[in-house]
Image (tube, rainbow, N blue to C red; front, side, top):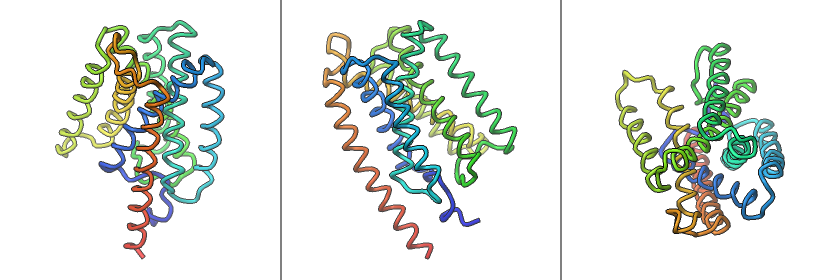
Length: 252
């Protein structure tokens, strides 16, 4: 099958990981803006972000092939909804960051297990089967929710500063990158580890940008940080479109 014409997932490259990190930062700051800055609360926040997620997911699923804007809108939607889900579980339901992280981890493991049982692999590129794409987006949503909970666990339960938490997760991501060059290590496993840990990195970095100075942040505010992240994301989506267009021309 011609993966260029039927594939629905972004190519896994340096640009992919950079966009994933910016998207997770945007999801954290935008989620906090909706629930905390606007004082709408986590329940209303979930309803708003869930609606956005379902709309952009429907657009992505109905698209016949990969279109960068659609794909990254769903990624941003999962990071924003993941922030609300995690905060609702940890704070509104009172599960706490440890139990909340464990519940979300088990949900992610269950999703990946069902995926593997059906397809005998967890490869994410290319994906053109509808059911496999649904497994992918479910795993993405759980991984982004888990990343938010784990990021809060690092700062609130372990007492790490937001910058230290970001450095810890960045170190894990760097280790995964280095292991990527060792072909004896399962590359699909490395992808999912990196994918999961880019979320707490974005979450802790987002908190570092927005939280008050006396709490270890830069006090930029959720709105300002969200606008900056949105502009950066918009620029990267444009670059992704140009790259995708160039690749298509080269294949014709």
